[in-house]
Amino acid sequence: MLETITPTPAQWDAFVTAQPRAHVLQLAAWGDLKRAFGWDSDRVALLDNGQIVAGAQVLFRRLPFRLGTMAYLAMGPYVAEQAAGTRYIASLPNVIDACARRHRAAFLKWEPGIIEADTVGAQSLTPSPSQLRFHPSAQTVQPPRTILIDISGSDETILARMNQGTRRKIRQSQKNGIRYWEASRADVSIFNAMMQTTGARNAFGVHTPAYYERAYDLFVPPGHAALFLAEHEGDALAGIMVFAVGQTAWYLYGASSDTKRNLMAAYGVQWAAIQWAKARGCTTYDLWGIPDADEAVLEAQFQERSDGLWGVYGFKRGWGGKVVRSLGAWDKVYNPLVYNAYKAALRLRQRREE
Image 1: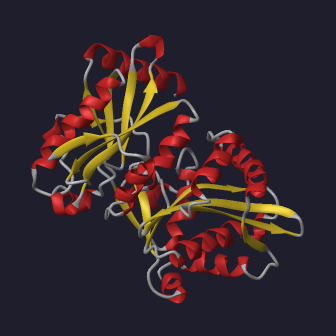
Image 2: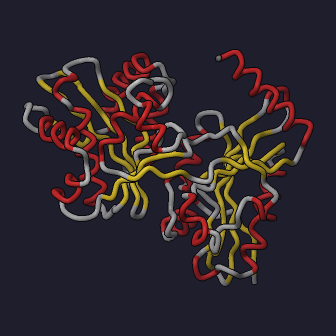
Image 3: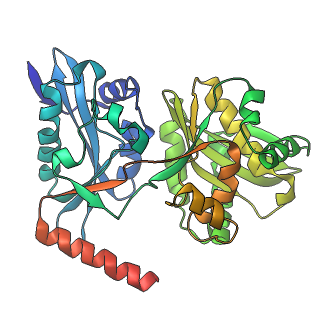
């Protein structure tokens, strides 16, 4: 008999980690992290014969003036492979809509995370946005375009996929007497200091120190993340927080100081994170976010631009990965009046920033 349940964190994570498209943003800990910083979260699942067969974790952000919430579903939902083509696919959207309405959502923003080139195979397990009355949205939460590195094979095979300059910088970073280590909880303050420096240097927003501390506490002890740091003669040089679920790892947060940048520690610490991901069984390493432009445009303009994600594309392009784009963001509207006011506010903010 089919039941709708609110799964426990342990139940939900066991289901998520068993999925081929398992993603860190669908782990219960991600809901806990976002709930500590202004969001709410909820999980819904369909249970059949005591087993979860489909479900989603949904986040909620309050809108101004008590106008309800924005519901946000990232990198899901999931339908178990054995359940594909059954009534579960038809039932799940209704369950998600009911969850959104319980939280007074004016609209639901969905970022499926499915790579455009993989839509044919993925649609058997995830309904397409158009089938579910969603329309495309220009406002994304996560970057729709990224670079995926194949980290299967030997170290030499992985290095051979990179461009010559990146290989040289990785090797240089190993010869400069830099110490690389997997950081403890006490070392998070070192990462936080570098993160503030990175944000100021590259003119982009970073989270508060408490955010990275909480992320460490939620993900590192269970083995879903690691923090790697680099230092030379007492000077902190670079740090990276990498996350992993199943066969995929994500480079979500990186920082570097303004000190001794010629030692190439940013390359060495990234290589250390790749080694960690490979050792825990990952075959794909997601560099998480580049400008949303075709590869030809990226290659033509990256040396001239440093705004937004252009500033990191020059670093990420050399790691031998494949540029891919997801389906982006899609919105389903429950309250048209509030939704239109929301879009108008976004347009106004964009004009002010230009």
